[in-house]
Length: 263
Image 1 (tube, one colour):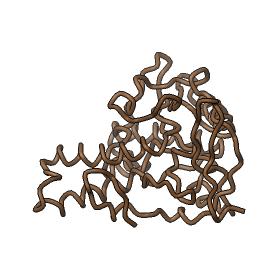
Image 2 (cartoon, rainbow, N blue to C red):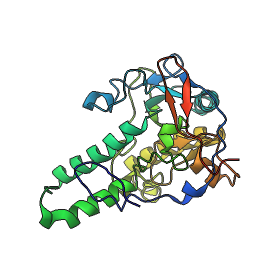
Image 3 (spheres, rainbow, N blue to C red):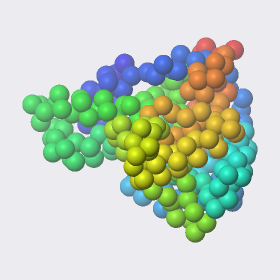
Image 4 (cartoon, rainbow, N blue to C red):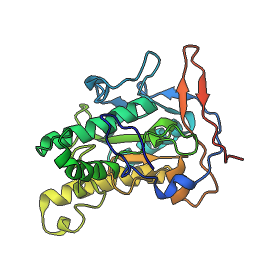
């Protein structure tokens, strides 16, 4: 599968996920605002670096059914941890933003490693970076049957925060490449190391609350959860996903992409 990810980069490494074959039966739910009910971590991380959201694209939104489950998840969190809240990092994401962030992540990680993307001799190294990015960033596909999870309004990136609105250290940053972002990265060291035990407990607290409310967790990312998208359907053995890609318009109506294999 080839994609145009900018800078003429060969993106064969950005392949379909195991759950990409799950059909989508779009339910047509609207996107609703998160700000009145949740702590949204501002400034928004992608808006602040110039991601092209567009005039009518507010990132702090989720499908209404997903929003309801997120409210429930925060209640579950506070039953066990009354002092904790969700800190929302990112929610709905239009496909142009997905493409921008894939390219940005590849570029930033190449710079960090001293790799020149324009040097023909270093293209193998660039491809390695792109492959690592592909484990965390979904293909910015415009195909109705393979929408990026965040573009459906069904996926959310979040962390834990205290009552002052300060996000907690989870042992690794959101969007950080590498095995440290795995949900269970600190599991084994937690037995003997105090810091690892704290990070593991916090990741478990986050995941436990979200899973109780019906969400599923991305296998590579401690911060990413979804309900009703293809990953959710795949992990829960559902026949179809509920949500495909959606986009707002000037009239505040949504435009949905209808996969060819929906029923």
